[in-house]
Length: 298
Image 1 (cartoon, rainbow, N blue to C red):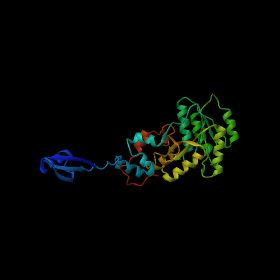
Image 2 (cartoon, rainbow, N blue to C red):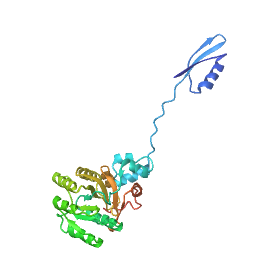
Image 3 (cartoon, one colour):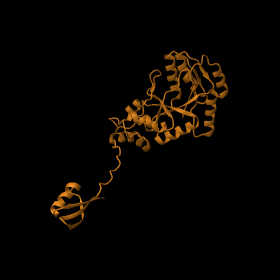
Image 4 (cartoon, one colour):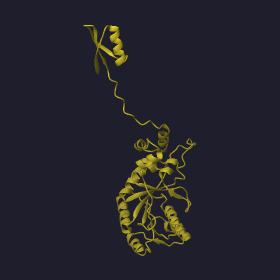
């Protein structure tokens, strides 16, 4: 409280001084007559502390992210600033280490699109003038080696079948000129401890970087748990498939809380069905389609 003493020839003059100095909200605490006039004690209550500024709610963005099924905690972290800038603050984005880097071992649940992604990456490398070593460790699914062999024949590549660590080690020993290596693996249940251990052993033998191939359209909670389990099996990177079929991307963002986003599968074409998954691309997809009343496609 701000206190002040005023003296004037009469009460009218004293009140005028109070209002002039403290304003119309001043409180008169006491008055008394003194030699030459009156004395007034007045006070002014301070203004209440301003409430801390809070970011304005972006109603349209919240609605879009909610429609996609983005987890609430992640929506909170994407609420402020431009979405293209907010995404890399909340999630990790990167690139696949293709070329003459460590082998890439593609893992994921059954039917995630690992084999097609291998074909797309092999096509990209061949078009860049490189001849990757393509290996399939999938000896479980009927016809799996034949499916990948059809792609490698078109690319002029030889497919190596090595479903256990020993033949994989021999195949890598024959690697020429430090060529890129792409390894396909069978569909994996990441909640099975022994299956996770097998994947870790395979990656260790190859000295490989493990990439999770995960389809879009999964329930966000399921996607998060799958990504967490595959991370425990050594996965560090994420390729999201079926973005051409699925409109709700909450599962992709939920999985990306554990892994680094790298590529998006956007179609079946070997040459044009895979593209970098950047903040700009993802921000462009995180909208509500104009026909959102229709059932989702996935």
